Length: 208
Length: 238
Image 1: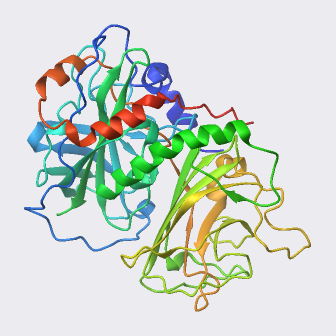
Image 2: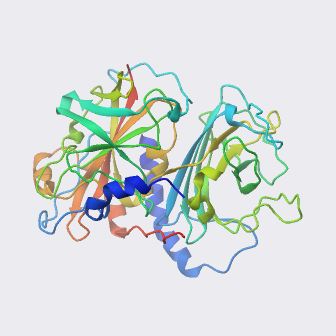
Image 3: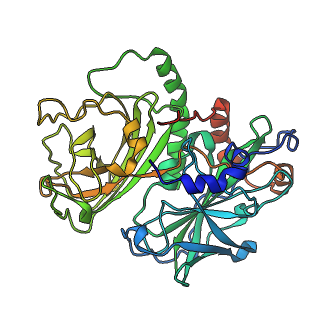
């Protein structure tokens, strides 16, 4: 059926840990935290970039992104490929330092969305997207593309969504615009389920 | 994305209703029925539909309405045979037209090929902003109202067939000016449910470090948290 064999194999080592839910060891965060926090949704577009020209170009027709740089957070990482797990959920990086991109989705220069996913923390402490919530409208995210070019996106807003009512269409649904979304976990950590209750979704539009 | 939050709240509210439905569901109906959104899904799919993808019934490329596009996103629960649809057309000019009972479909057919409709969805209508939208959930068994060989083209179709090979299905909408299709796109699988990107090791620190906005999403988080719904696993497919 789907061509996931290789990816599944590659992920197999850590898959049980990483795929079953903001997977943690027992221990931290036994005391439930206060209410989740979030940045304001789509705040005033002070430095709103010009709307990019809509593109319905097939993502398969353009080169893949290979690395991400978020200057405001000091994040610079090569990208790993992610797909859909056997249970229908999103694959996530097995290494807490990795950032992955959803390969069946959009790509820079084609239809969107290009979706990046990274962990907010490991079992031991902060992970690659720990500071994602600090991004504010106007911050930039740069993707290096396989042809050597750089695609620049400008953050437009941040949304906190509950995982069990995750807005699939709004986050992963195809878009004509060349947009980028960055996803990590947030909200309260449910020690029993070893999973955060919410996702943080940062949206950005192509600006250069 | 404030629209997202509205949808989110609506989703949380109907979750309870969906649970009740599962308990009282009767046997298969004669045709699909509109149902509340289920609490869980087994898969999700999206399609970027464009005019250049349109193929007529003879398998010939027949471009649809120029300059238009459509985003079709589907979430499926193949255990209960429910499909939820979120369809948005940009630039497409009604009236819709199709010999089937509606003009907005999922067809079975590879890219570049024609194929019979398997599900007919309510046609997108103006939501007041100028965009044409259609959203809701249908429970099978499905009928399309087309029966070129005597039996409805929806007969025998089940949603797990999409899960088994999504690229063998496409979605489109037909208008009177573009009867072969105004826009069309092949289905691509996308993840269902939330994204598991944290292990809790910094959760205490996080809560201490951000004393800012808590009011904004408090309501939604409470609503959603009450369910503590575990994602149901899709049965292994052979």
